[in-house]
Image: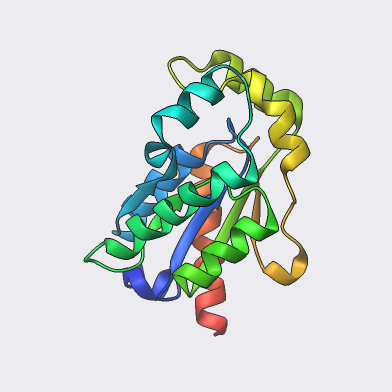
Length: 177
């Protein structure tokens, strides 16, 4: 395996998608494989935002701005360098903010049918983001354009297959650079 920072292009890797796509699971697996830190964006929401989402009410763009900055601040504060970040990053403007703050960053978009995501959210216990938020997240989602160069992976794959594929694509793009 290539050295950690070489594998993620001396930059950050953001695992993105709606609630229920497996961002945290895949992010942790990738961070372990790449031997780098992991940032869980959900842990950086304010208590008020968590309570609002727990009630099924989506956050506004204005509410998301300080959270996105907190995510970037946490990632930039890590002494070991670039990390894997699990963050919804649903809109292009959110991803642009992250690019501006973090510098070199790649996005890995976990995508799948709404029915599969809804089933996962219904089965999930103890998380503030429930199936009640899915419709608003899908309406908010701006799928990464080709020019963004995101790695798009199907959540129907197993976590092992998603992780293996992501690592192979990262390694392939590194060797082409």
